[in-house]
Image (cartoon, rainbow, N blue to C red; front, side):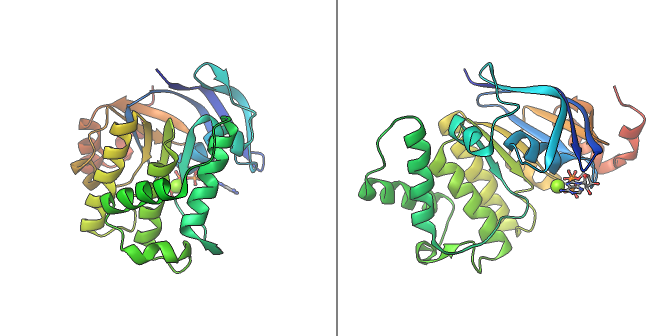
Length: 252
Ligand SMILES: Nc1ncnc2c1ncn2[C@@H]1O[C@H](COP(=O)(O)OP(=O)(O)OP(=O)(O)O)[C@@H](O)[C@H]1O
Ligand SMILES: [Mg+2]
């Protein structure tokens, strides 16, 4: 069974310490949610897990299935099965979406010494997943994220997750900016995909409403670069009623 382990992780941005000792173990198929105030380091954790060069790990270790990946480049991590959905997805003008999906998928397969996808089968799979996420068909004619609405960009991120079949998916506020119907489609779609592939999920969110569709195994409250508390769904209620103030004084 796959396992992503983060041990006492400290990380800096421009010499400022943002992550101050994060420890977290995610097993295949588990859903972990992180909530926390703006600026507490949630996106930083996501970027550090993916190996973004702007962030320096000063101590601690990240392992994937026992292998130390702390120093690996982002493309290597992707090849090993880590997927990050960005809080602010980038546009890639001129690159048609299906070509992007296919090339990225082929790169992942090539890293495993597997042959590239067969185009008709691949198109079939993509269309199936698009249906699950209720994408309009004309979406395939468009360039990556170019002119996509905020909600379409988030949906497109989950389509990538469906196609790339990662071992672990890090979803940074994939629910933000979605209307109620889109939220339901994206949240349910992401969960169906995770269940089907036994993918472990780390979901960053500010909103209780996504948890109408996603039942996390663990909820972590992150305050000032540390996990202040870990629990179940009841922690979300606690945040809604008390805010984060209550967690500032209960750091373990
Ligand atoms: N590339 C960067 N350059 C400078 N400062 C950064 C950078 N990335 C993060 N920081 C700082 O690190 C702190 C944590 O930011 P981060 O984006 O991780 O917070 P967050 O918990 O994701 O917040 P939000 O809920 O608003 O998304 C902030 O003070 C932010 O300004
Ligand atoms: Mg963030």
